Structure formats: structure tokens, C-alpha cells
Length: 168
Picture (cartoon, rainbow, N blue to C red):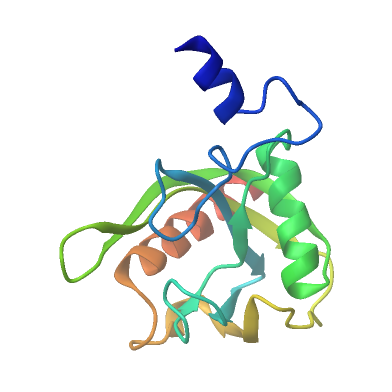
């Protein structure tokens, strides 16, 4: 029994790891840890249009999956660089959000645990990368009514309040 486990996880060959512990985003074996940022510039927030599933074509917050051995704040800075080619100063944690999507049979298709931070933009000219088909700066009091979930709106409002409180 022990030999089967060692072989499955390639503990006998550590330089050639197995795929049983690889993060599967679609139909995962366990929840996937992710990070996202409410990037603020005055009374504006940066939204990205998702280029990948889940929620392809929807407006959302930039972010992505935390890689093995990576601290969550480092992961968020890396994701923002990859997704938008921009630098930010991270503020604090705003919320922890669970995103669970099920397929038509009820099986979990996606399950993310997302650490939502607020951040201040260092520049105002990001460039959309592979995970974002486009981006736009939007006034916080004029968030789009469509293609933006109520959960994302709630996190944006909470982040804007935290950001204002940190400046006073």
C-alpha cells in the first residue's frame, strides 16, 4: 500500500513529480486559492473584461491563482504585472470570497477561494494581457449595471471605504 502511494506521487523520483497534485482549475479536486485586487485611482476603479473562463466576457477585478511556494501578496503583484503590465501598492485585505460554479449535473466545475485586496495604481495606462481582453477605469459611483456581479460591486465598495479610511 505504501509503495503505491510513493509511486503515485513520485516520491521515489522527486525531480519528476506526478500530476495528481497539480492544480486543476476546471473540475478541481479541492478549492483553488486565488487573489484579486480592487485597484483604485482617486474615485476610479480598474475593471478588466475576463478573456478566460470562468465568467469569460464579464467585467471583474484583476487577479489569478497563487502558485506553489508563492506568498499571496507576491502572487497578486505578479498577476497584476502579467494581466495589466502595471505596478501597484497593495493595501490591506478587503474580503475573502468563495466562487463556486456548478455544471448542469450539479458537479463543481470551478471552486475558488479568493483573497480580495485593495491597491493604489502607480500609473494610469495599463495594457491588457492574456487573461484580460480589455480594461477600463470606471467611477466607483458609476459601476456598470450589467456584466459585473453584485459580489464584485460589494467588494469594490468595501475596498473604497477601506482605502478612504486609511488615508484619514
